[in-house]
Image (cartoon, rainbow, N blue to C red; front, side):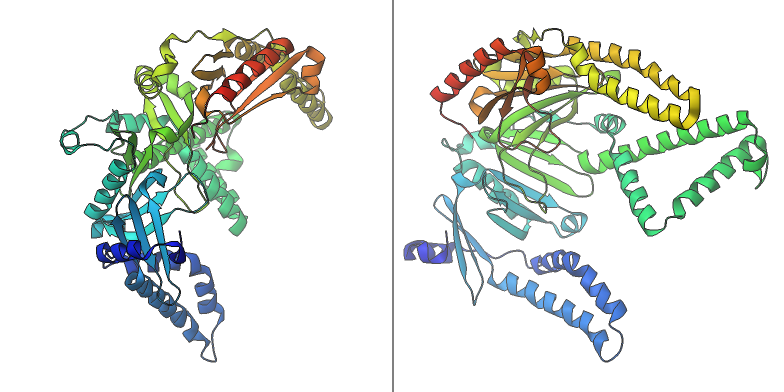
Length: 506
């Protein structure tokens, strides 16, 4: 709501209750702007020599400093009734009134510098749009927590009383350091970081990576054969094999250690709390993130179990949240349980979805369809075998060994595929080595689609797709595949009628 649309009384009340940002907020605004303009400033510094051009970088920094101070002196916020009022600008003024009921996510972020100064960045997000309703850089930590509590209490239909707030509530989930270390063992964050580094290194210095591998090979083979710099030339096949095994083992151990370090930095002190109808996640070792969202914004859920998860007897639980995001924003609340025991994950699901009766669901298997899951692998194997035979000769036929292996894996995946459609929930279970359960309450479904591919038409089957809000790019699809056409159409008609009778709860 802009300034001309706001009643004078509201503006007067806002002026009386307004507050400023933290006195050091200009510094954090300046640092954020320097991140955005660092490339042009460096270009001016390197290529703008002579004829007074060396002053342009200093002038650019000076302009950013003035802009940051200007924002501090012209930015105000205050609470009027059940709304937050934000005023900014002097020459071009803006006055926004944001009802607490419109705010669906409150995110508090603290970098290491924030923690040194005892401040936090606050972002208030709604379900629509790609930008936050309000972004405050920065508030004193106590003021930020007080604002979050105010939004939590006034943004729900039945505000929490003072007596209930004073009583400590145990967390729904709290991760110990041991659990965070387990998360590092099951995650691939180290591999992702190393892959990004290798890609960047190969672009900047094409010979750096081969030289690095050659140096590592010489050191390892020299240690195995007690040789010197000519270890690569004089090594035997057995020494090559031992050296390669040592390199692979060292790389795997290093990647896991890096993943553990990254998990400790991101998930140390992870705590999942519930306050009334809102849930809050707090995490981080050096930098701290605190994200709060309304329970009614939770959409589709994903329960994941990989091979390493099963070895450690753990799972992870994620949820899609209906909150607008843009590329510059921290991801909205998503990880309900980065890692937890299967019983703890089931308990969280039943806590948030009591009507679903998660542990008592009767899963229904799909008709035999192993060959339909197998044919893409079979086609790729045949193509790979043909290419290998053309390039390496008869030895390329060995690639066909993958055909029976992929067939066994397809049968196992088909045997484990199942689905549930109840009065409260739609759920799908897929995967063999890496398993996932994807499910959503019926009230959260926003679209229902029945599709038939050429293969479906040939086999008399169909696929049902379910769409919810807030689905991430890497979230598994919520779909039921390979249903007999008659069953799929009957289920589509049943769910369409159920959705038509219910009001959409975003």
